[in-house]
Length: 231
Image 1 (cartoon, helix red, strand yellow):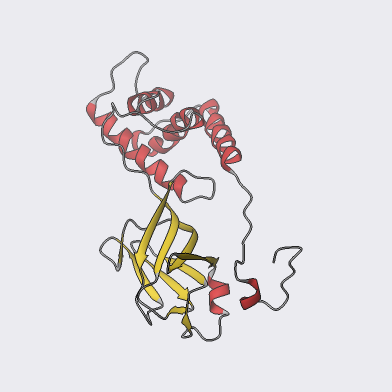
Image 2 (cartoon, one colour; image 1 turned 45 degrees about the vertical axis):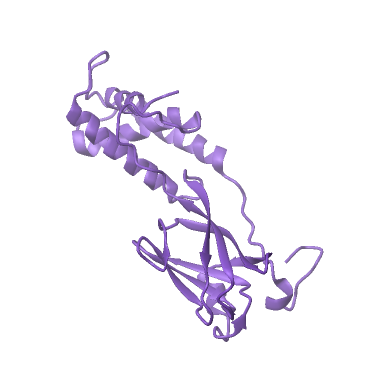
C-alpha cells in the first residue's frame, strides 16, 4: 500500500523539484503533506469526491425546529459536507425524512406546525450549519439520526499509509504536482498536466453515481403523487 511519502515524493519528482533517487527534505515534505490534505478536502466537496460517511444520532427538543450543527454547537460534531439521509425515531419506530433543498423548504407555507418531522433542510455555512425540520418536533423524546459526509482526518506523518482506494494512487501525485506548482514555481510538463486531468476525470467516472431525490412522504407534501413513477 502506498504511503504519504510515496505520493508526495512522486509529486515532487513530477514537478522537477526533487531529483530521482534523492531524499525529500523536511521542508518539502511538510509542504507536500499540507498540500495533499488540502487537495483531499477539495475533492470531498464535490459529488464525486472522497469523504467518509458517518451515522450520528441527536436528541430533539419539543417545539424547536432548527438546530445549529458543528463544533461546539447544539449538535456538537464535525460539520458535514452533505446530509444524505435522515430519520426520526419515535418509540423504537423510525420515520424517514425527505432531504429538501432550499427551494423546497421555502415553499412550505407554515413552518410552525408541530408533530413528527417528515422533512429536513441542511443550510451549510463555512464553519457551522443549521438543520431545519418540518414539521417541528412536538416531543423531546424524538431522536434524529443523520447519515452525512465528513472530511477525512488530515495526514500528519510521511510514514502513514494512504489508506485510499487504488485509483487515488495514480491521481494524487499528478494533481498534487499541479497544486504545488504555485508554491515551488517552475513549469510542469504538458504530459504531467494532461495526466492530472485524465486521472482526475477517471476518478470522477468511477465515483459518479446518479442521484434521484426521493420524497418519502409524497402524499403529505404533493397532490400529484403517482405510485407507479414513485414521485
